[in-house]
Length: 165
Image (cartoon, rainbow, N blue to C red; front, side, top):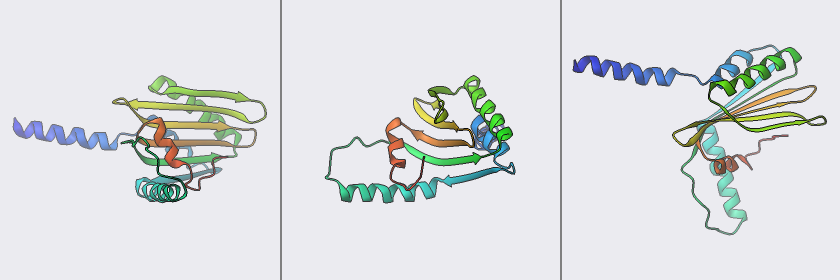
């Protein structure tokens, strides 16, 4: 009986590691399209960039008592396509995330600047994932930020040299 329980526990842990979020499946499916560009920044790259950013901001500003977050950003994915057909499929897939446990944080439509949809998924009281879709006439961009974070942790991405416009 012990052996069975140990094997069951090992299988459960392995299955959790293999599980993909619904947003990851969108990147996997459409990131391979001919007109799509997919970039992934894993934990190690993000940690190095964030530590440089924090060092630079500490050097340039006076020390202030800031709230230290225990959050962690473990993955950043970005995909962009200029294909109208791929953009429509991506948009439809992202909108379907609302039915899969994702919460709408921002929904914004602007004739001049396009359409933006920001979703998040919570786990154990922390944000586990952000998905950001931005569509303009000529281009569709999708960003996924994974980890265990709070809204304040997203500020760590600022100053990393990432161009969000």
